[in-house]
Length: 254
Ligand code: ATP
Image (cartoon, rainbow, N blue to C red; front, top):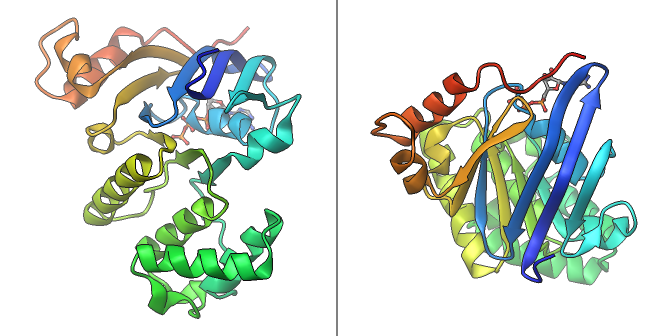
């Protein structure tokens, strides 16, 4: 294993009944990389995140977070991860502070340390005024920001964003991508950003194209366009070409 690896997946597979949702997936993300996982509905993105967050075990293969095997050393592995899920998971009836404090206490921070970190993160996002607001009364964009803040409070080395822009308008989506992009640089944090929206991956260091459980390509956004088998003018063209050339790949019914 590369000593700079923040996240390593080695031949990871997951099957639901007869559906092979992930088939021998290999991914290696370095400590400061922003990697986009691009795939259509059903590609296997959420399944991959469920394995990375310890919700399910893979059927085969190895997952390491900062060198720690997720099965043998789940505590150091999982505590190195921050995650924003596709579905909102804030308690709508608690205040922003209440939600954030709960997360800090779960991660073993003292009340004093929790308060310092929460105030600090809210200030960085310019959201100090929301501290005592009930989450139910926030806009969708601000709820997502609060979820991102929550994911950062325990200072993870790897940030997982699972289709985190769902429900946001284009401007809020763009601003969330840019914000996470800059956090990645500032905090030397690895980011895995999953999406089916091509515009969101333009500024990634690397794009991994996942289709029906298999990786079809892995390259910089520029190279994906340049290396497509037919002329492609945009990343969206290159992505659609890859998908259409691999219609028969993937989910296998045995
Ligand atoms: P989306 O963008 O629609 O959320 P995705 O890329 O996250 O899609 P997954 O949700 O991981 O894809 O699904 C991958 C495949 O596994 C699909 O064929 C899906 O129908 C199947 N699948 C996912 N979860 C289950 C489950 N609990 N039981 C059976 N099949 C499942």
